[in-house]
Image (cartoon, rainbow over all chains, first blue to last red; front, side):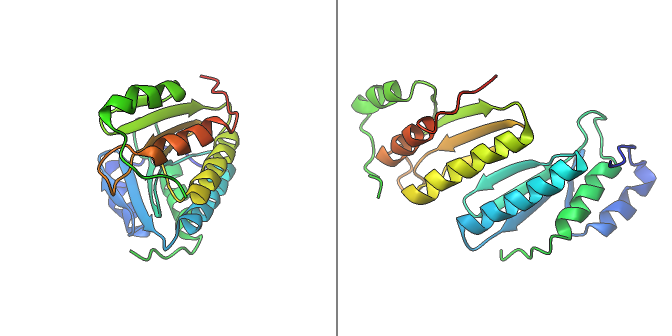
Length: 100
Length: 100
């Protein structure tokens, strides 16, 4: 199970450095992936869903045709936690390279 | 292929009456589906994706754990068209009953 300890402010820059494709927006981190087709985008959503279910920690997912935006935060803590960065890293490790 | 003729204002009430679970929001129609589990919600997203790809008309899809919100509009027309209501009806015909 993932670690839901709140990330201390002093450690946030280090966490973000490990996920450079993700952007900090308030208490969330977000990343958008562009695909060349809608089915390709849906395949990615299914891969993300597998990561999320395995981790027990689920990003918000917005599907806009072939553009997928993910947002991670830990609602129960009202803050970013280790779980958010762990899931972000696992999604990055799916090896998907955005085209846009 | 679906019909992308703009719905005349005078016909909008009739179109909405055929999709009573959908709400009109500006130039969009929207419906939210609640599921009892995240995998169940993802199964529904895949079914919606199949309808969308078959129709060549794709709703915006927001995944919030087990709550899925769909939005339909025809961006190329800046308006609601026959395509939006046809896809809404096809999604309704998937037979999914929201739990929430």
